[in-house]
Length: 261
Image 1 (cartoon, helix red, strand yellow):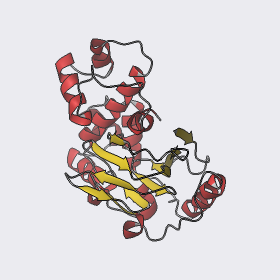
Image 2 (image 1 turned 90 degrees about the horizontal axis):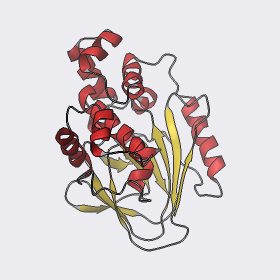
Image 3 (image 1 turned 120 degrees about the vertical axis):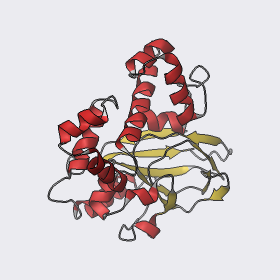
Image 4 (image 1 turned 135 degrees about the vertical axis):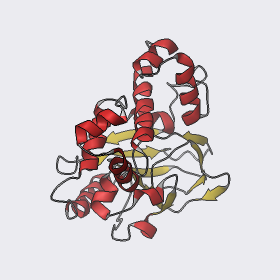
């Protein structure tokens, strides 16, 4: 299985976190995987066979061009044959800034791309045409770059910079907005509250720390800003569905790839 991350151009880096590729190299074995919230919305294009998704208790076959909003909980995903997909992982406010989307509509949703962003045109897709795909996509995005970035983007940058360990009051003081104004902006441009979004970013930070393989649960809890180990375990299970002691941080799968990328 190929898992690859590609950096965006300097021009698009304020809006695109990265491009990623998952390719089974022709293997058709059906594998059920868990997807865990990572704090970034995405456009996903399948050039292989379709996938099935269970995000609300029912298995549904996806279309080949998708838009995924913010997640509040894990969900299951499985291939129906050969896996081949390219993803564009956006900065949290980018879809709102570039396309004017209300991100609250997309929370816990994975929908056909054309239903929300019909202006995006997807050309030839595949490993052999990857450079062309990215170049063409960035050319489309470049035409939509706003003159100024909003205050919500600055708030998100602060949360990520602090690895999710930034209180709402401290964030308000840094940004100069009331709690109500901040909540309203985050709901529309991110799809989550500042507090909930911070929890997701803190989880991503913990995954990066666990990747170093030099940790205890007490140490991870402390580094993640949790008051005690039990609080950390409860938070971890809420997002992943598993106890941290049983989670396979070094397993090669999509959840670990997305969270550590």
